[in-house]
Image 1 (tube, helix red, strand yellow):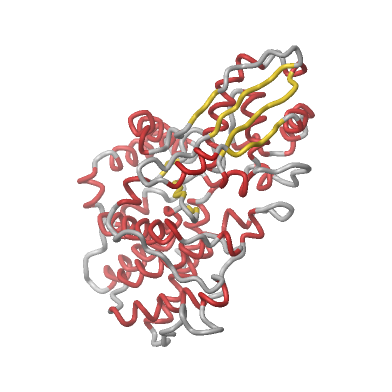
Image 2 (tube, rainbow, N blue to C red):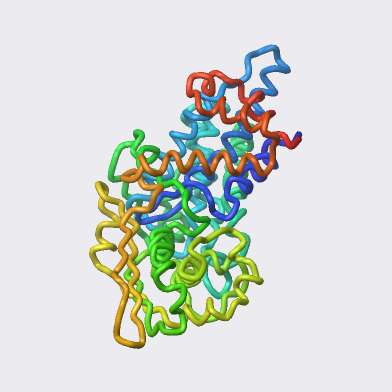
Length: 400
């Protein structure tokens, strides 16, 4: 048993293991499922408190409802507001979305909720330093857990009487807009509804930064054709979109697994070499294979303006990459283009069965067959899941 703030931190960190969770890509990027750290911890805390007071615990429908709300808040704020362009990390939106939802769960009124949100905005926000060379490091795997737990802490402080700061965004000189957003104000292009949850991306195929998912898929497709011709490769042409170039295109030395799992060239090289990409491929023993850097050195990255444009179009939201390999004798492979990853809404029919397989495979690494079956059965029946108490749900995930 943990205090809820520590519980939120731990759950948030577990959810973010190797960035293998859901993803939202727009002007700002992020992973809305990060908010489950604070939501689940709060729901469990409230349920334990209710039982001690002779009341009913919360049910999982409350958690799922909070999850939809958090996805929508984080995702809509991300549509046209680029925090990365001012050097801020996207976990600022985890902090804000978690604050709003947790405030509702804890019964704060409108004024208190506004106060709590002002606390989230006035808080110092994380820089993207730890996501980019030469400083990429493991903080990127716990930054969201830190943000969602901080949200819960700020809501609890507000509940105890801490005042808010009404012009936290707009105050001249000292407000968020002037200090951290280059004087710009936020744009909210659509109402808060369910658009984000309906269009969210699932990481299914590979434990890779999402902008590289389609590149790795293309590389895996090419593997059988080129695996015996590695020494004959002259050039590897990768066509991609602007966000991928800004976030994960890296040359030179890669210092650690966190650096490698945010390198387009590294992930593509592994796909070409092995015909797959798994978590262990980011470790030193794989990275030390000289063929990896030999392939990286032959890669040429170019922006395809259509890919960049369609990445932001609301009816497409593509995350396209294409790879073509040229050989020393003048021959080449076909250009393998993948516009939508398997976790995209346009590939749900392919994706959902694979998502279930991933779920079952991950459960089997920690639990007995009996426990796995119980969890799978519950999660495959929406009515049963929604009516299950949060306490009963959480107990299913206690280590055996």
